[in-house]
Length: 214
Ligand code: SAH
Image (cartoon, rainbow, N blue to C red; front, side, top):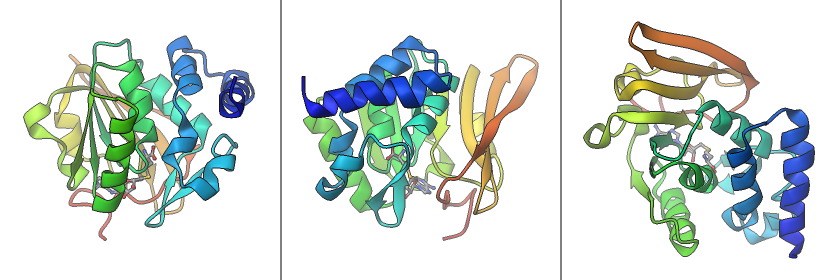
């Protein structure tokens, strides 16, 4: 067994299962996806540590626990169409690709999108499409989505995204100021929208028409 495989198993036990992540499919996906390949070579030794890591362009890949927490809250069963805003390294997209049918992911920085797409292709993820644009507009041609995951922080919940949720669909998005946010979960039900919060988080800015200015 490779050293990185061992590190992943330890990460799943000590950082995820021990802190209450229960969805077996989420734990399996996080044990499988080679997180170290989504960061620069100089960072690979730290890829399974309990913190976020820089991925260039002043952006970061989230701490493993936050990836697991957000993914679990989407309650994916395998048949879903998922939209992600903030492709970054592509790691979260790979996790989603393991757990849903199709993943549409949007990144505003071309260089990051390019690199993410390369590694996703290399690892054989054929069910992920990366697009370079402002994600706050959503992806109208592919909507509605069963789940939408925003991996950058916004001042408010963009209505464009709520409008692109399928009935029963879930939206996860960090909402707050530029220093700290609450992780919000929005569900579209026949009676309207229900909202809950999953605790405090700290994400880089969501920059776009319906979020922060560049
Ligand atoms: N999910 C990523 C981490 C994302 S970091 C991973 O697994 O590595 C947040 C990313 O959101 C950054 O790459 C940033 O460029 C991107 N971003 C910020 N505003 C955006 C927008 N309006 N549309 C798309 N991407 C955006």
